[in-house]
Length: 430
Image (cartoon, rainbow, N blue to C red; front, side, top):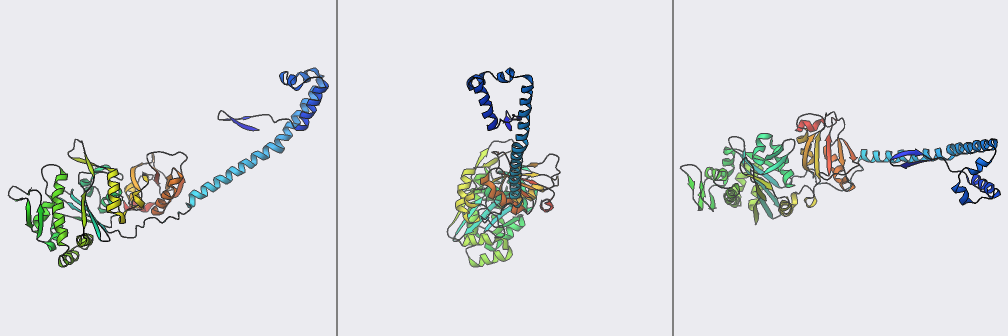
């Protein structure tokens, strides 16, 4: 029969039958030898027998061995192979149809009560990023430092300030969603004129300025209680100030609080929504009492390119679970780490896939290319059984491909998405 030895398959001669062993013991007893003696002196009986008799015995043993091999060993091997093939078919069938997960994923079709408001300067860089969310009677406002570094699909690490110039509003929304783990219902990107127009229905704003702000060589807004028209308020929101950006966001909060307080007036609220319907979430937040305003939890990092921040992940997870509980992309904010690989070579594949993976609850942490491209079928690969439901949800969100389980687990990601040629719509969205 076949057995494994040192990783290779070796052949072992079949054991004699019970009848053959009984006849052999009888011959040794007639010859006056014990089994121990026989075992310690192999072949002695055959050596004492006449040559013709030894030849006939060897021939009989060989015939018995061949008969046993074909009647016992080979059928056993065939049954084992059939069982292995059957298991393989079950595994492939399981990976092909995905065994639909019965856990209802977060629905991307249900709009979240969240707004991402972004202002861009004349060069196209973002200098103001605010996320506003409402839930029941509560509201939350989160200020995002523009110098915060984030992972952008296919572009690597970028600052939030650079995102508007790197792609469209969808890329900005997907990147912020990926960073926060919060669904963004509305994205509004405004320039100087748009921001003034949005503030106009609420002017004048009564702002409690905690520090003075210098707008140019001739205009400085002093600290204390100030009445600001829309144009001045817009400049205070976006003006560059000495010191850290975190210090500037203190002034931004002063103006936003005054704006939201004015939006509590029904006439100002109605006029604002009539002019910019996208600001409906901000208007609702202004009518909420109370609302909380916070700054993204970050820490300063040393770089050669000026001020940069890095997100404090643990603090962020605790914050969003409390402040944006109704808009989380995954229960309790627990998202699988996802790697996206471009298997076709088309432009925008990773960004297009991320636009589907992130709203479905995946956190994109790595992107790259498959060497040589040429992948025909998209694969969603999971590494542990505990991640199978997550992988199935991402497969459903992609709308193409097959589910696969890897034979070896890795520690850096939970799911790998290899985009193939069967998902042309993904590249078209990038």
